[in-house]
Amino acid sequence: MQAFEYARPTTAEAAVALLGSQWGDSEVLAGGTDLVSLMKDYVVSPKRLVSLKDIKSLGGIEYKPKSGLRLGATVTFQELLDSPEIARNYPALVQAAQGVTSPQIRSRGTVGGDLCQRPRCWYFRLGYGLLAQSDGKPLVPDGDNRYHAILGNEGPAYFVNPSSLAPILIALGAKVRVQGQQGVREVSLHNFFITPKSAEEREYALQPNEMLTDILVPPPEGIHMALYEVRQKEALDWPLAAAAVAFKLSGGKVDDPRVVLGHVAPVPWPSLEAEHALEGNTVGEASADEAGKAAVSRATPLSKNAYKVKLAHVAVKRAILAAAKGGANA
Amino acid sequence: MKDKRGTSRKGGGNRNALSRRDFLRAGATVSGGLLAGESRAISAPAAPETQVLGPDEVPVTLRINGTENNVHMEPRVTLLDALRNHLDITGAKRVCDRGTCGACTVMIDGNPTYSCSVLAIEAQGHEITTIESLSDGTRFDPVIHAFVANDAQQCGFCTPGFVMACRAFLNKHPHPTLDQVKKGLSGNLCRCGTYHGVEHAVLEAAGMGHAGVMAPPGAPDRKS
Image 1 (cartoon, rainbow over the protein chains, first blue to last red):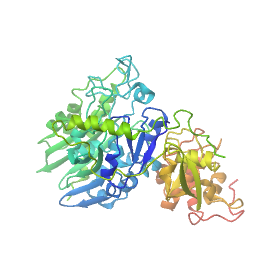
Image 2 (cartoon, each protein chain N blue to C red):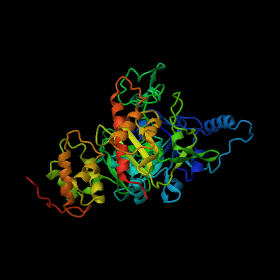
Image 3 (tube, rainbow over the protein chains, first blue to last red):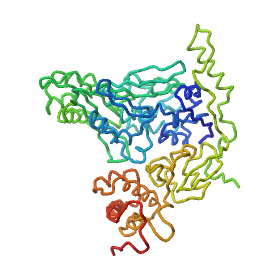
C-alpha cells in the first residue's frame, strides 16, 4: 500500500473540502472493508484518505410513515439489520442486507460503501483498469468472463455492479443525497449508476470531490417487495444474479411494478420488459415466469456466462412469487 | 527502536502526499471548468482547517484488552499489522490479508472485525479485544475448552480468528441453534475443513455457562 495522508473531518462540508478534484488524489474511507484491500493491491493509491468516522450527521436511521426512510451513508449493515422499523416496513431491504453473510463485514461495512463499492471484476482487481484492457484491447470478451455482464455489455464495460442494496433500493424508488463543493444535491439512485465509457471515469455519478451522504427511501405503503439472490456458495461470496421487485396489487392485479436485476450488468438493471409483462396481470407461476423470461429477452451473454441468463430469469420469477406471498406493507 | 515490519517498502516519505499546492492547483483547474463565467475562486464551503496527518509516522493510541498502548506508525498501518508487528500481540493471524478468511478476527467494541481491513488509526478510541484476553495463562474461555474437546482444529492457523468470531457470536446469541451458528460463523474459513467440530464447539460452549466468564482450571470434561 502506498503511504497517504489521513484526515478525519467532523462535517460533510469539511470532508469534501479535503477531497482532491481528480480521481486518484483522494478516496473517502467509510468501513474500509473493500477500499483497504484495493489499496494493498495498488488498484487505487490515493494521496489522501478522508475518514468519515467522526461525521455524526452521516449516521442514523430514521423512519417516518409519511416521508419514509433515511439511512445515513455510514450506517453499517448490522445497524440496518438491527432496526425493527426497517424489518417491519422494508422486509426486502433486510433480505438484501442478509445477503452480506460475514458478520465481520456486516459490523464494519456501510450502506454508502455498498453503493460506491468498486466492481469485483478480476481483471480490474488485477490492475487492468476499470475497462479491463491490455494495450487498448478488451480482455473480457475472449477471457474468463463467467461472472461478467449479460446485459448492457456491448462494451467497453463488461463488469457487473456489485451492490447488494442497490437493486431493491432502486425498485423502491430511492434517492441519494450528495454533498458537493457547492452544496447538496439529490439524485435518483437509478441515475446514480453509470456505465463508464473510459477507464478514467467511475461507475457512479460522483465528482472526485463529492460524496454520498444519505439514502432516502419512499414510504412502503401498500407495496409488495422481495429480493431473490442466486448464489454459488451460501456465504462469503457475491450473488451470480439477483432480482428485486416491488409492486402494488389492486383487485388482485399487479399495479406499477418495478423489477431491477443485480449482478448482470455494469449498472443495476431495471427491466422495463419484465415490468411490462407483469403490469395488469395476476401473480402466478405462469405470469411470474413470463416476466422472468421477458427480463432476459435482450440478454447477450459472453462466451462463458450464458448460464447467468437462466439464473436471472429464475431470480425474477421467484422474487415476484415471494413478493406476492409476502403481503403488502400496511 | 521502531519496528517497521509490515509496512511496504514502496512509497514512504512524502512522495504520495497530496500537497497543498497540488490540491489548490487541481481545485482551481476544475472549478475554473465548472464555474466558467463565474469569477469566484475556489472557496471551500467550510472548515478546511481539519488536521491532515501523515503520510509519515504519527502517534496512535490503541486500547487493547483494557490497556492503553501508545505507538508511532504511518496512517497506512492496519490494525492487524499494528498488533503483530508494532505491539507483539500475535494471536490474530495474517492469512489472506484481504478481509475474507477471518484469521485476523478481533472485536472492536464487541463486534467481530477483520483487523486486516481496519486502519489502526481508525481503531483509536475504541475497545479492541484480541484472543489474548481469553486466557490468563491458567484459565481459559469456555470457547477454547470447547474447541479442544470437539476437535475443532487441525492445523490450527484459523483457530484464533474462529475462537474470536465464536466468542463475539455467543456474546450476542447465548443460546443459538445450529442454523444460527452456521450463519453466525460465515465470516471465517478453515482450509482443513473443521467446520463440523467448530459448530459443535460453539453449541457446547453455549451450554458451558455465562458468556465471557473464564472457566476455572480443569473445568471442562474432555469428551474422549
